[in-house]
Image 1 (cartoon, rainbow, N blue to C red):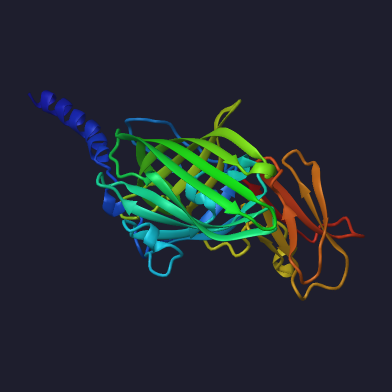
Image 2 (cartoon, rainbow, N blue to C red):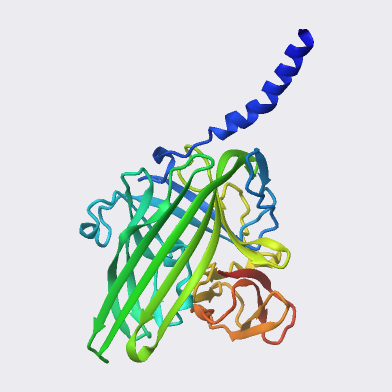
Length: 378
């Protein structure tokens, strides 16, 4: 009898961890809300193990990653935003690059349209999930037609973050559409539509370790199929479909993904190509590899770079001719740029392939680098 009880006890202990972990649930109260703010670390091609879909608890150790740049994710109310009247059911907003808000780079449109930081409007659906009701974004066409802030509603609303338990899945379809008409200096009508089909499955759970802190997490495996159509008349047109695979690690009460990873299928298997995560480190030289970089205090922004970035030399840098050399992951020189003192120098990156680039600052007559940084092209 005692032997039977011992075997039964071992069996119960062996399944208890799964039962406890299987109760990991992200509720509506665990999703972003007004007042939530976090510093966000950003890195490209991180050396991490993304794990697998599994009914057993697992551990993700992201403690070795180091950001190439730091941003901030801040959620606010609708008061004081550009177009709150257009989204009466929205209660939360966020200002961020449009590609980050939509989880898709609009570089694929290939049109001469500058889309600056946008304001996203979020609303909680009757199902308890958080949806994007629409966005407001300043639009500039071809550098000479400034349309100012434009409100682009999502109808149906586009899923942002769902409230799920392990094993649950949700599929939604969001639709954005905007027609833009200008008469001066040229008569142009441009129509932009984005159809976003998102499928999110809570396929794994366990512990994520980041900067010495452990989070109990539920992994969201998201596949986004985005159909982008744009027609700007004489400026061009494009019709394309993109598929983006993202892993988001959600933790109860954190109210923002602890980490979001873009995954691409490569010869070696699924590979993490981009990561955003809650940054709690204290590295003062984010994204800078050369010891002298701290001394020069130069600026390279925004980073990651969607269409362009700027390089600004410090005012106390000695007079001289300075250049920026940019190398791809194969070590090939792809750009040699003369820098202007005390004036931001624009670096056009819209035609670059996605990847991580080494950016070297040097004097024109000296091969030795003054500083080295990294620039990520999503």
